[in-house]
Image (cartoon, rainbow, N blue to C red; front, side, top):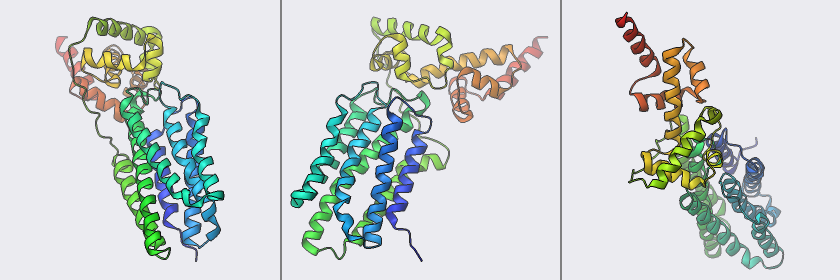
Length: 338
């Protein structure tokens, strides 16, 4: 009876985590990069499973090269979600070529190159998500936090694999290859637990951790002027109603960098971009609740909300009550006046 090696399961869970966190996120180039990255990750899991689970020894010649392709692909995939495009993406082929050359001609350099590649790209990706406020500016506003979580999870895993590869190389040098399958199993269990806690838990329980509230500072005259332009852009052709509205799209309408738009909203209102846009949507919802008898679902969609959970959460944040409570209170007030 065939058994399913643990790397297969880890690869499946990681792919599911990315899918859940990036569902609804599609920007120019991102689908291509993410597809290739997930294929490479699945292929790597199969190779590791066959090599250590079924003893297919010759795969040790393939495994390092396929492993070296994953960190650049992960970085390019998440970088494609940013308002700033990556220049010269072909340069990221170099780690793969370097490791492939090392496997063929300089085997003693293979582990060092792999470790360097994973750690370097892990640090690069993690820093990018913090150094660039517009790191996922192309994603729809409700998906910005999950996309950031996915990017940071991927960065953590790259660092983990880089460090454990170095540890595994040292382990085999001292103790040989006999216990390597057990060590690889322990590594995959650690990855499985990390992915489950950091990536899947919020989705399983149907909620996501709230975004940190931005600290309001004294806005400048430039901030106030930019805020007026942002408000005008949102109302032009009812831009705020678009379900897939992103920070990058809003910034292009305003004619300002995404980070400037985000910073101006933060400083002038104390809200993040998603909250600011949702405040405009909630005003429209309240108007429709007062002036029409449309069902709540119709009103929700007309105002630009895509999911009931986000709609109810944001409506309660702004008004302090649920949409149905708001409508009931409004009707009771109208009856008392007549």
